[in-house]
Image (cartoon, rainbow, N blue to C red):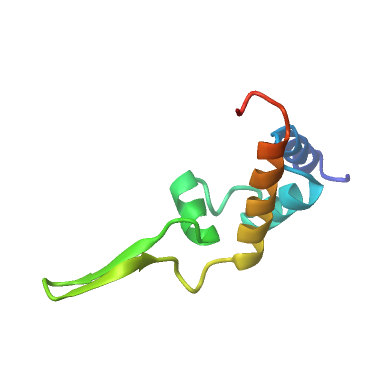
Length: 93
């Protein structure tokens, strides 16, 4: 609680349905307070929820897959947060 900016960002994240303290702090730490990853698309790639196609010319077509370099721990936390937001009765449904 020494850093007022971090506390403010954490409170804003926790106010979102499905986001708890663990998910909020993990997002803040792994994105460096949203300074290194500023765009939602880049965050989706980093977490591993954005699949990419593997196409080489006209002969090789593979199913879209998630990168093996994705942060699986953060993906797991986001999944659990989404599931708890679905269970809550709020404006999302």
